[in-house]
Length: 341
Ligand code: SF4
Image (cartoon, rainbow, N blue to C red; front, side, top):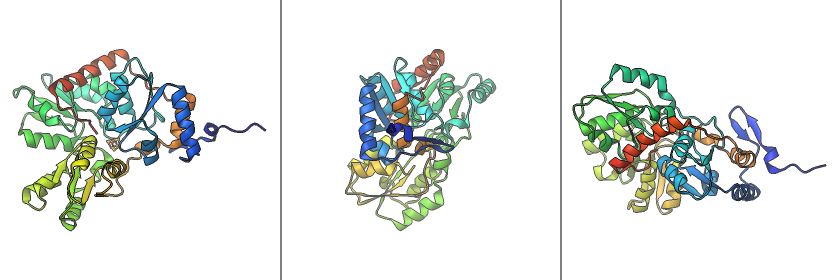
């Protein structure tokens, strides 16, 4: 009887691909297939630890897309959610971009469609559209300037104060930008990430009060970002120990941190990279249930299937890609782009 290959053990279920554990045999087969395909494996900071550990590069969404564009390999395997793989394709139109499971979506990117944005623009025909990078390629194509959490304030501040601004899709990041810039003619789309919105101010306040010596790393998409700034403003938490950071910024800040403990308000996959970056620091989640089910669809089985079968390939219409690329390039021209989610 013929022996089954490892990839033939992959099971396609409603929640994603299963049937394979991250064994040394799996790791060896993934590396063999990646070399045979001339592929580089990129993993977002929220991926499962075993996916992060086998990747060639781990980082935030924009940093990974730029690595994809510069990589000598012709195939990019993007272990993240769909809009991130689309952004890699926008910046690398001539490369093959694969995602291990194309069903890995994003509640924030899905909170505004291209049709909804067209309608919103029609209501404000002279407005400048600023979109966070967590958007689909079709929405980026209708955007004037993209932004990341690192440069959202700079991007909005660069716009003529007399022009209206449509900011999307994240209401927490939008509120943060509006507060910092003091801009009144800025309209904010009421979108949110279900994971980050679930990290709320009450939890943060309780954690901050019971760990008075800890530093605090907060992603600006969190429902608690406002609370973190409020706590610092009230003196309940020293302002110099509150850091509002993108996921890539968190890794850099971990290397520079001086306290023994850091509370982390973002998706819990982030803890793996932080603990690797600074093993001497005790990193604790503000909410240990903050796990993104879409990110976790990139399983060991999904990655093996992707490399074995050359799927799922991410395609972006060339005109949409060109328009989306222009909105990303306008952002990069303003500077301090950081890395997005
Ligand atoms: S954590 Fe939220 S914003 Fe990030 S991919 Fe998941 S749903 Fe989207």
